[in-house]
Length: 216
Image (cartoon, rainbow, N blue to C red; front, side, top):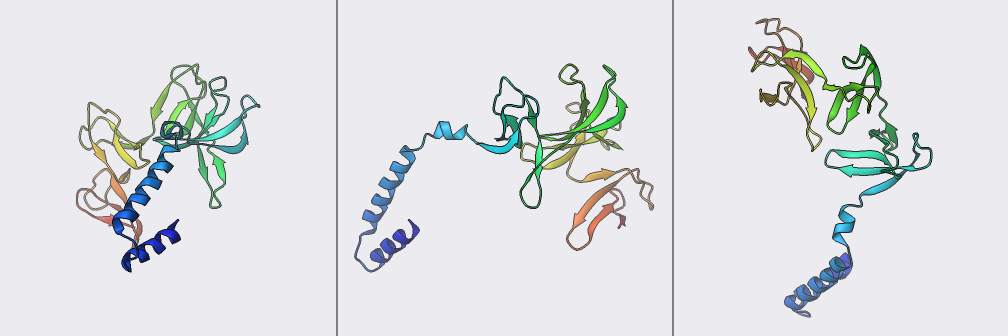
């Protein structure tokens, strides 16, 4: 298609073809291609076979699905089987299923072990007895919110996949930041925490939000 278009553009340059005629032909062909595609059907059909068998029902295949929060795996037998998993890819692009980590902490609602899981919007803590118990909470950094002073800063992830930090008292407190807070007191002014920052020249370092002291 590109080579043919280049030849036609050469014809226009040398006066063999009128540019209006070329544009009309291009537009007509484009309309035919668009008409051959069911836009609504394609928009909701972003699935791909992962080659992994569902470990819950043992029958369906796990499909790669896409949402605003990114890619995830779901059983093709949904809604009969509601198994879904988050995954990452290694350097070769191979799927690596994210395995939840069991914590040495009991659920405050039912007493079952708590798990650290990874969802579409980042890591969080949830009850291992889900869906019978729906207890969950965000993972805190252990740093008090600098705005309200009572909440704690938690890590979150936007629908676009960008990591940010906010107060766990939202929406009562709307503090938000991009840098990760680290519970290290500044050696110069004794500020209770520092920002973890990164640059290509320095790598990872820490910056005091109060006096701007840095630590490597």
